[in-house]
Image 1 (tube, rainbow, N blue to C red):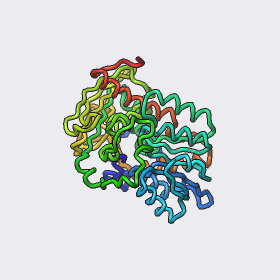
Image 2 (spheres, rainbow, N blue to C red):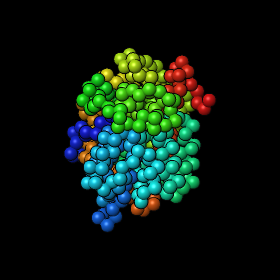
Image 3 (cartoon, rainbow, N blue to C red):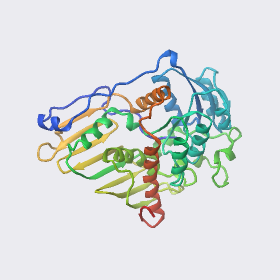
Image 4 (cartoon, rainbow, N blue to C red):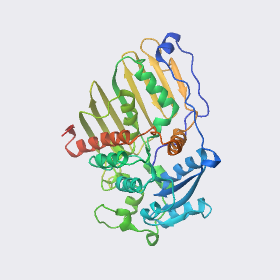
Length: 401
């Protein structure tokens, strides 16, 4: 289950606060990006691979932004297969093995399986001639990056990585501001994300009927091990299946950093982390991490038992600071504005997950490069994986090894 927040703070409109004209002229804020909705004659036949909580959100987006039909679904857990069949009004065929979906007459597949299945499923789908929407992180290990990139670039298929900020209007505008030099020289980027798994999983998790679950197939290439409801629901926090906060949450934010700063690989990483609360997990629940890129540093902090501040980024430049989250952005000019008085504010008017799925559908029709190409997804996953590598190596690693 993906725990990214979908609700928009201060949503529903976009507003610019009074600002200083000279700063705005220098910033070059872009106009709102136009959107395209596929028409009734462009109905796409979609295959669903991995029908858990995150997939439900993706299918919501697909239904809202374009004409589509869910014609096949695979999941190792029967209640999840049944839910998609019901959602399709009985149109979708149900399968345990994802390869049976690839044999169907589908235009594209959406993949939202646990991370350790991502590259194998995506590569098989591409080889079968299907376009792919692949949830993040697109890889489970650093080594898989080359495999996935080769699979995409040696095919004629479209692959959209699930990095929805790349289709989110105010994130695009923030990147334009940074690249235009409006903040001066950016020397440090702070990223953070706090969530509370105590509350969210008490609400969402239901007892698993193991008779309806193919646990062996769920494990796939992971080491054989007894069924665990904790691993089934919170697989992101076990090394065999996920990568903890660094590949679940940090991956989103570091992708925005890579995009804005035009640098996609840290030179070294440090990570101070531990299991203070969820002691049954493999992955740490409390993290402080730092990454050194050419000419600037990135820091990340977060924990999984407190969520008041949610998630966001701060680009700190010599002339101004830009604060950014999924609800919008604000810019504070050195010597001009205070914490309560930004020179520029923009609020999000639409969930970027909608625009991102819309971009995928449009690229399936046009055959143009999607907003989040494979190289961006691989680089974002790799940064989090380098952080985890530092954690495993007593807190520090120089990259490349």
